[in-house]
Length: 267
Ligand SMILES: [Zn+2]
Image 1 (tube, rainbow, N blue to C red):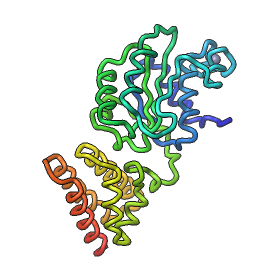
Image 2: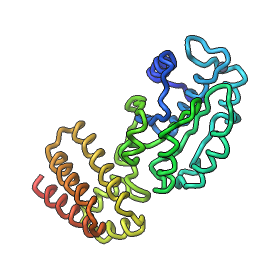
Image 3: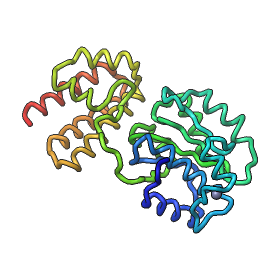
């Protein structure tokens, strides 16, 4: 069993004390392995029958059922981590959103950044008027991997900096920051094109991809204070703006890569 770190308990106590819940939270900063444990703990804290100073007892019927993944009010989406489809979101309307619960229902979306555009739009409609008693928790390694419209409806709950290997972050399925930088360094332009084509990145997604890349570079900059990263962030920002216009995405990405390469050459 995983022990929930104290600083996370303190965050929950403050949240529960305030009783002012947001309809949607982004849990950031913890590794995926403990993220679901934290979500279970959060669900317990919300539904415990005999809490002590806002913290769950761990032994009441609700706490036990949540611990054993046997609780009607904790719904998981995209457990396999492949993609969040429109059917997943529509199913919610038939199930959890129809129920009238005593406590709080928590809908946890694994790897929420792998959501399809139609599912994201459907989710957005729900988030615009989240029914009382339902709390969404989205798992995204990086908030910038989510559509900005979903991000703006969510409250980021930074659970500390437990993330250890930022380069493992997936910018897009099959493309990690690590892989991307490796391609650039080793001049494997054809591999990048193939990756982009295989991922079938469309306009909106390419923008999300660039934002994620930018955000990752910014984190790296904060750590190393490397001026090259800032230069690259500026270049990417330029291409994010270009991505808003009707342009060929693959060409656009290639131009971006060339420009990034040039910058790295003189670093
Ligand atoms: Zn309990």
